[in-house]
Length: 454
Ligand SMILES: Cc1ncc(COP(=O)(O)O)c(C=O)c1O
Image (cartoon, rainbow, N blue to C red; front, side, top):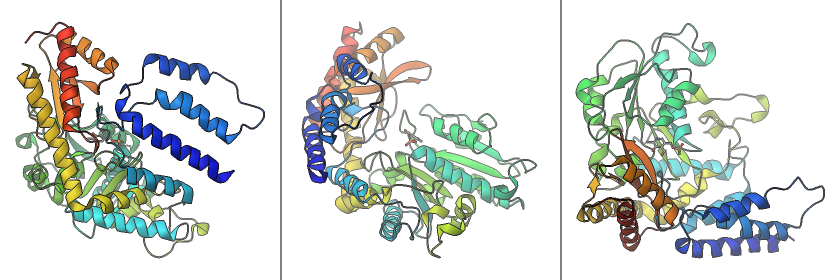
């Protein structure tokens, strides 16, 4: 019974991938309702045949999925999944390794070391950095900021892992006014307080204003951003880092998608100076186009990372070399390294650079199409993000709904300078120039039908 089920799953998956580019990008309401009704059943008493289960998934669940692996999904910052990484994900699942240490999976421990080494080379970060693979950018930020908390309090003779935060010197956390929501979530989880931050005003593109960053005494964590989630803009690290650098200060870069600019020659200047930070968080499930979920945390201070993450138990059998359990927030974990290594092997330096540059030129093409039709693009399109709206908030909101329901493409909504706006994000290997033109037309038509006149 083993092989027919897996063959059946593979054939359903391949058929899905072949058709995904032609489907309504967001599932039609009747598909979602059909699934909801089909799921309205109690837990069965007796077993169900595996083939019937797969048939059910194919008939009811697949049609209700969002076609985010197709070429016209521009929501959030999502990324696609390259076939070779879907294949590696399948293999990783078949191997089902528990990747917390050499003892639990020597093969995956080796893969992870190799994937991390290649990432440092690609992103041009110091080779002696340590890192780990986590679920996403949020956990990568958490991992890095836990190391930061250890290091800055360590400078003041405080061992936060042993003693907690009660009675510790207060940590000053400096963020840009437009820091990503995950930074605040992480600060809350780490006991540093979502509301205790020093928030530095941003400029018109959402970049932290370097001239308004103040120096201060005491343990300090500075959170910079590579890639504003709306505009794609970068905080000016080359001005902020030299200004804030001193013992007791940790500088972190949240580069969930923007850090990949460092892998592309024509875009690297955007992240200038970020190599001088202490830690970096990014996502492989975004621009590296591996399947969900995969985030990356990197730091130049392995000791701080180990101090904040290590887990001890006699049965855990430390190998004496790098065991992921001592540098990761998780213990048991899946083989994320396999997908990262496979993506990097498949693309090489040139392939990653081309992918990132292609998506950014698609963003510029989108801007051009919209502006030629008389629309107002609100941001400087420096990376992969385009934000657009018209003067009338009601028309913009109605157009956004029409685009999302229309099925040609899918883009999210946001607020930009207190105006509702459509945000269009490019990070998929599948997207073509034709996808961009078709989608631009759908956007323009939706605004027109909503009452906008150029
Ligand atoms: C700048 C930034 N930081 C962090 C995140 C969170 O990443 P994840 O959703 O993978 O946890 C995102 C997600 O879009 C992001 O754009």
